[in-house]
Image (cartoon, rainbow, N blue to C red; front, side, top):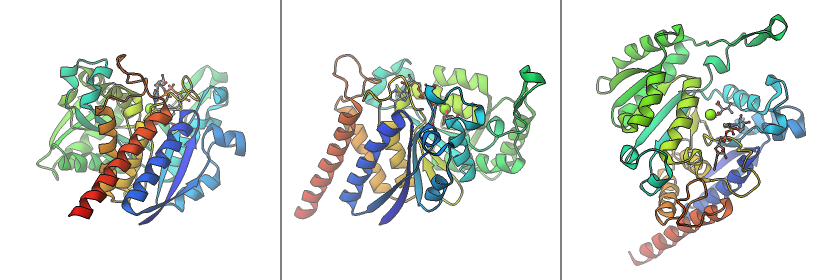
Length: 368
Ligand SMILES: NC(=O)c1ccc[n+]([C@@H]2O[C@H](COP(=O)([O-])OP(=O)(O)OC[C@H]3O[C@@H](n4cnc5c(N)ncnc54)[C@H](O)[C@@H]3O)[C@@H](O)[C@H]2O)c1
Ligand SMILES: CC(C)[C@H](C(=O)O)[C@@H](O)C(=O)O
Ligand SMILES: [Mg+2]
């Protein structure tokens, strides 16, 4: 199969992890007989520097003409003093909104070989496998007004949702739960926020169509506590934009590193942009220290969700697991007893593992 993929590396480690992911996807294409055409676009600080804006029209055009998009990360200290609406992060919010990517799926998997890397106790995190379904194009991030008043001494941000925006994301949560362990935790702040009270109403309504899914409501502060105390409590979490942002960084510590969390930002027709949960990591950018696995696993999510290439996605996931099981880690996951790999070496390990498995599969077929 031939597929066009928009590639938006962005800034900092976004560039480093994207290079590796394109190589991994090309190795998958070779092994399974596909062609992935990569079309690069600029976003974030990179686009501010070259085009004078964080989201050029050309980038949107490339995405709209592609079958799916990959995004690295945006932002960094270089652009921090720019006014809010001109900052790199605006490019990311803009592309999510423009492409209608309202559903952000953030799977959190505790790999057995990474239990050492988590600050949480191994017996608490072993076997954890949860999915955070984060609303991505509404809430405080997009509410108007959002402005300074009274000469800068007063400020307002607005948490705005329509019922239909809540309905469509809650539906995604139920759909995901019904295909997994049939448990949905809806996270809100209904003891304080009107938006959360409407959120709860919608969850209760939608629950009627999913009688097999066990539903619970949890306040976000309690959910943050539970995530650390007993993360295996959760199967699918559905929540609004800002809560999902914060909870997913917290959840990354179950895996041992922010560099392990992939995500899919989807709209209903199957188009998606696939982005790691982490940012541009200015503290390690340019040092070959970034863990590329979140981006690589985001590539696997693209194969699964946008291209329905399930064997191909599983081949990547399997290669990643095998590399970790063999004791190879980047420094964010290292346990002191093994020498940490740099970004490039980690990418090579994953590709070797993919090709090795491909070669073995070929031999088996020849003898079949
Ligand atoms: N999706 C995105 O583009 C995105 C996401 C989050 C933050 N940001 C932006 O990134 C910039 C830096 O933000 P921040 O430092 O708060 O968050 P960050 O996610 O970039 O980094 C937080 C910490 O995690 C580490 N880390 C992150 N990814 C890693 C990886 N793949 N391998 C190893 N370590 C990793 C970093 O070194 C850092 O110590 C800001 O401009 C922020 O707005 C962008
Ligand atoms: C960079 C920022 C706008 C972004 C968000 O909050 O959505 C990031 O933190 C993420 O988690 O994707
Ligand atoms: Mg975030």
